[in-house]
Length: 147
Image (cartoon, rainbow, N blue to C red; front, side, top):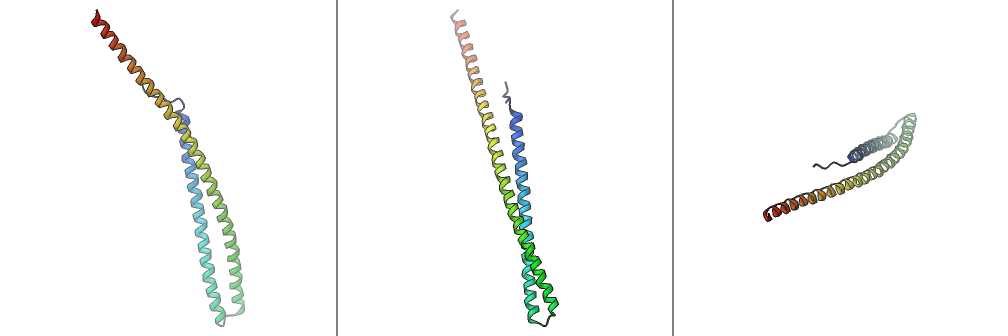
């Protein structure tokens, strides 16, 4: 007789939910990394522009060009501030997805443990049945020899 767990479909569902939660966390981490890379690029642009602005101030650069560069620095500062907010949101999303995954992992473990317990009970029951059959056979043999 083979072990058949009544709630195997639930166990499978919980496994699928955990896998889906892993994918969602992976996506959130990818988004966070993309936001951080974008921030690094903006910071690099700003740093480069500040060097250009210093050089322009030291040379005889028209004031309109310096003002244009300063305006662009302000624009980059606004973009950088917005990017920090995006990164903060992405961090929160990652944390939310990690919490969700933890819940799904725990849920799956509960069902796997229940299945393992049911399988152990089944195996113990099978061992007991086998032992009873062997005992019965031995009793029958003993009784046959007595006759």
